Every structure is written in C-alpha cells, then in structure tokens.
Image 1 (cartoon, rainbow over the protein chains, first blue to last red):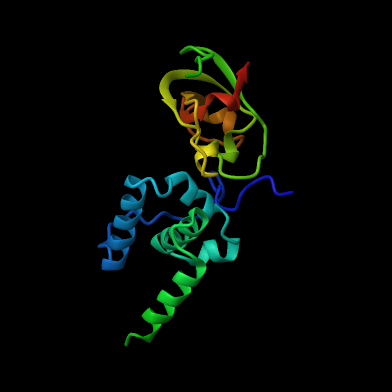
Image 2 (cartoon, helix red, strand yellow):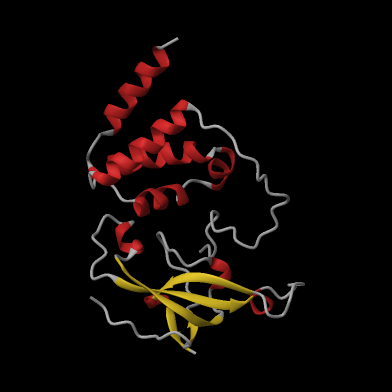
Length: 100
Length: 95
C-alpha cells in the first residue's frame, strides 16, 4: 500500500526551479478554455480532474507536460460522466491523426 | 452546514492518514501539530467532489500555521519561520 502519492512531492529534493515565463501554445489555451467551460456547465469538477491526474502512472506523470495532464484528465473525466464514450474519443483521435 | 470545531489560536494535530482517492492534505504535513490561523469558510468536500458526488454539507476549512523547524528536521532558517497550509476540518483533531 503506497502512503505517498507520486504527485504529492512537497519537500522532496527537486533541484532548481525555473521561474521564467513562457507563452502558451494555442492548444494549451484551448485545453484551459475547455476545462473552464465543462466546469461552468457542471460537467466535471476540478477535483475530479485532479484525481484523474493523480491516478496517472508515475512514469507517465513525469514525462507529460502540464496541459497534457489536463487534457488527458479532461477526456477521462468526461468518459466517467458519460458525456463522451471511449469510442467517440478514439474516432476523433483517429480523425485528428489523419490530418497532415 | 457543519459547525466549525476550532477557533483561531486552537492547537490542532493533522491526522496521519493515507486514504485512497483525491485528498488536499499534503503528505508532508500529516501527523504534525500547528495552530489555527483563521477559519477560511466552508466548502464542498473536494474528496467527495473528486468522486462525482456533491460534497455536501460544506466542510469548514482552516488555515493552519506550523513551525518550519518542526516540519523539516533539517530546516536551517529562522526558528520563527512558519508554513501555512489550508486543511479541512475532518483532517484535524484537538492537540
């Protein structure tokens, strides 16, 4: 039984913190906007999305960027709520992969 | 509505618990004793919200102040330095 969640890193050695600012990519803005939108429509809560982020396997958690975690947890949350199905998501992802 | 059990100045101890699911109480502060700095208000329980329930009745949330040197055995800053953590009532017991 694990006592400490992989995400729960407060106090662990981490090396220097990058305090620089950076621009957000268009897809990152879109992910943020979608999360706000589904929150406003009460289709999922920030806590549900956090739970899904915290449930990522440690190796996935470590190699995905901030908004990658957001978009994965958003998809997961909407499937849990029955807003979309895994099939809907798979079909759309295949469609996106077709784009050049 | 839940009654708030603790007033500012009260000494409280954070439960040393390791539940499954989504919790807002950081690992590093569990089991430590601090002082209630303020009552922040009442909010739906995020542990319940994370499981797609309504989190009601709202639970009192406290800002609790801990001495850094007590939380981190190797802390090298001032003995008066503090860290404040917002913690829901069901994670606290009187100390």
